[in-house]
Image (cartoon, rainbow over all chains, first blue to last red; front, side, top):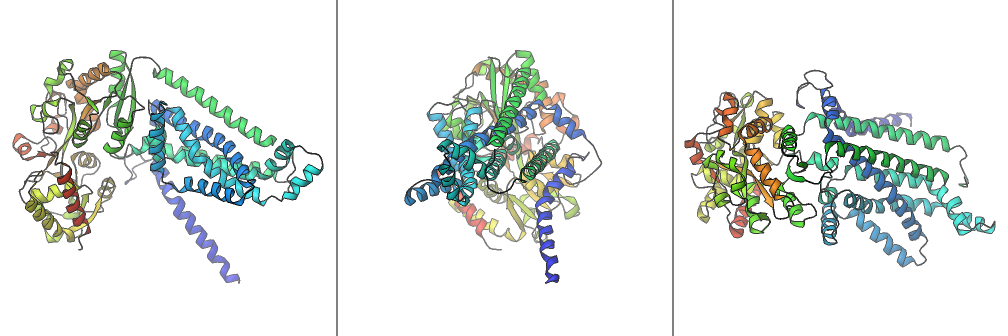
Length: 267
Length: 357
């Protein structure tokens, strides 16, 4: 058996190299003093300087982050409520239908969703911009949150709820002191999923941006015809770093809170 | 529960702090004032300094948005939602937008600088009398080749591409009009030929090119040529110019038989809120000095005759990008073929793409 142990590690390493190589390639060239991605001429920080001098681009980046954070937070709230509703639906038929409807939203193509939103928003007379992008992002993030939270709820033993009720807990207490603490990891996972979905979405976002409000993905795609400049590489490097820090932070927070491990009843 | 509430509060605090920063940045850029002009352009297709200069000269604030394809741009304009005052579509898109009644006529009396535009680029079939559009940049379709890979081989015409020595070396743009046009041109027919026999002949000629074709691709043609992946690429002049700035081993030629002449023109969509400012901006861009500055930044060919005086001698004497009268006479602008004929072009192109080596 000992011989076999090396292969999985090797396989895993290979997968990670394939996954990360393009990102590191991109970051590597953000330090290139030559203007292109095919020849490394020398080290420079010019692209980073140029990036911070470009107010328009900075506004776009901040917009992107704001939209991601807000839409992820709101869709997490809606998604958790939705997951609870689905899981406590009495009839099996209703439950399955709701779940399927949720899944349909996940698999339907972005372009369709984007175009539908554009038509809807212009029909009801909503001005395209911050609000329309936020609404669209919330809409496509909710089903993901539902899917992330649902397994946690299903995994929870119902006897815990009965026990709490026997001990005199109100419905509200059951929700806030038993259910929510138990499914917290699922909620966080849903939040971060929604965050990444919102950060990188192009197709839906393109249709609903307007009136001077754009996000990063739309801006970068529009550079396709003229070629992407290296300050976009610099920007990608910074965003990559930022997300890595977020993930590490999240890891430590969950690590610290794992100690009282077990019953799920926490303050 | 406490942890969740804390996390939510943290997220909200961060996002509102960021919102505050953005609104600060926005007002420092003056994006919030009343008199604004909204421009919808291709990514990185204008010198940002010029936008600033325009803002300072006129006091009009410019909101600048970008798109990545004519089709996407048209969808957004058609649906409304944002009132774009200026858009920059390519010629076939202008024709379509005209048909769908999406454009406002341009008032020539408000654009005195229009006189600087070379007459060759006015009154073209896609917009007779320039009723709806003002030239912004123009270019051609031609052959970009890699001298490292091809060695001493000289390419001067479309027919050179059929050389059996070029096996598996050619990259084509995935566009029915471009590729069919190349087939037609190589037979000395017009790009806009509607004769079905000629078209079939062109398609059959293209079929015989298949052994030489490496791939039919989209925008990634730029990357492939940049990385020396292929000896020859049939590309737009704008792409060619940019690549040649970066690499010395690339050459661009306009084929002897003739080729396509394309345009990106400024138009005013029907939904425009500030057509007055749109005219002002058009006039501003047509100012010879501004046009020269913009051209030097973007790198495509300018239709502005007067601007050439302010530009680098070397650039404007380059006949590949500023062809003389004789060559331009052989270049053709795409005409509207009508739905049926266009469908036939597409069908033949599809058949060609499926043709086995």
